[in-house]
Figure 1 (cartoon, rainbow, N blue to C red):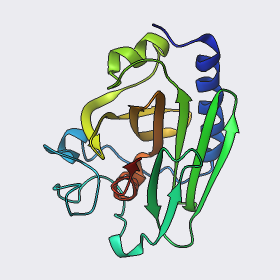
Figure 2 (cartoon, rainbow, N blue to C red):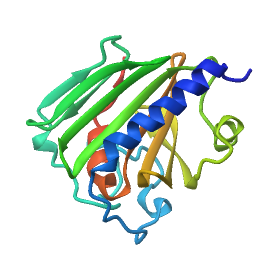
Figure 3 (spheres, rainbow, N blue to C red):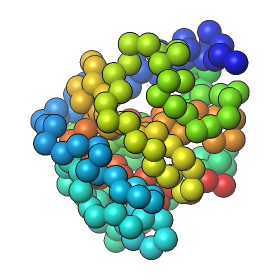
Amino acid sequence: MKLSEKVLLSAFVIVIIGGAFFYFRDNNGSDSNSLADSFKVGNIFGLGGNKSNIPDIGEGEPVKKEDLKESYKAETGDFSFKYEEGMKATSSLVEGGEMITVEKDADHGFQVFILPFDEEGPITEERIREDLPDIEIREPKYVEMDGNKSLAFYSSGDLGETFEVWAVHDGKLYQIMARKNQERWTRGILGTWEWK
């Protein structure tokens, strides 16, 4: 079953809004590290404990576990994650879905786009291309986000180089996007993600 036209329009609107968010951000990323090198067997995200067992690699500066003192809990109660003090996490409704923006400063930020989705996960590259045939998907890898099989990949476009993670959970599609040069920092925060 295909996504409705309304959901596709919402996804387009969200990408445009995301472009405005990231347009003014620093775009000094490079392709020196590959996604394949960044992900190992098991969970990719996290800073230790039972959520991750990978080395701290990827682009950008890592986040420090001891700095993640604030918590974001979705109003719907579907998920939560931790972030650094001094950051701002805001949620806004967009046509057909929700957008969460998490910002520290001009060098640190990511967005989570949430849309209704009437298909079972995990999301696949082929499924994304059914609705977005022109999307660039480089080095796709399946990863786990709190036990949920999710698709991580690199992309590019009006926003420059991006690091993205797409997940399907409980009737919703989650599109997480950050600039590629903020990958390590974003992965550290996503390592605290918990589904409810």
